[in-house]
Length: 311
Image 1 (cartoon, rainbow, N blue to C red):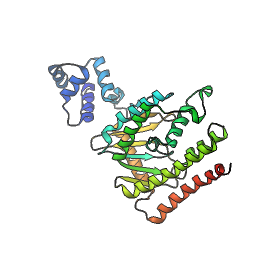
Image 2 (image 1 turned 45 degrees about the vertical axis):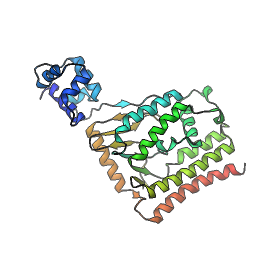
Image 3 (image 1 turned 45 degrees about the horizontal axis):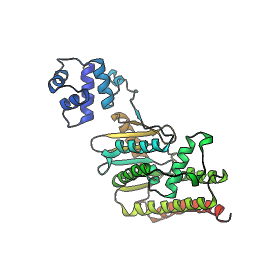
Image 4 (image 1 turned 90 degrees about the vertical axis):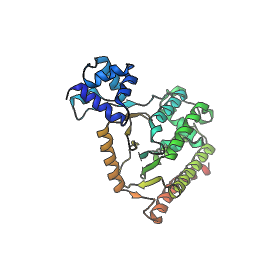
């Protein structure tokens, strides 16, 4: 099989039941007859056409040489400002919108899942404040009470939150999932950038978040929470439906590399399934495990809260 046939077969796998003729006319801006000649092998794809198809359908030309370990990835929008964060959320929605009501999410929660910091709470404001500060120059950092969320950012966040709410979700947590947020609250207080009353509000939001997660687990049939005592999480996210799948791998604070390579996403699915088998599903493991998990996390929040209560 020649390279042109391999590329066309790769496109067939990407588009599922859609017409290959339509896919080529749309992506190359050619006539139906011209598309037919290329599909039948009567005309050869030019180098520019092959590159266009590769980029349009996310197929690495290296794969046509059948190198098993080569992979093509896209990356999320870089973030250094609120406008770029809004574009990041809009881009995330674009990548995930096909996985809403009929999709399944697997989330390895090294930190509180991004989708819980989209609600417009004080905690939402703080997490976005932290992300932007860590990506900003030192002289650009302002106190927390001088940070305001732009309206466009809140609108994109709401759409993304609803998408996650509608999907079937499997979240993997461990004992360190809350750590970074607790450390961030303490760090910014010690740095003088948040006040004690603001820290208390943030910790109250964290307690409310844990209550919401517990209620979601018991009330929603499409949400599953797992506790893994040994696995170190990495914030990888795998999303899939009956037609396709995508893997999101973090490479900076909130930026991701994104691939829909079928072999890679299949390997990731196998890995996630094995970890779920080795974890406790708190939906089904019994009330004792569930109560212990949430009591432990609440106690850690309350422990830090005492620091600010008596200041």
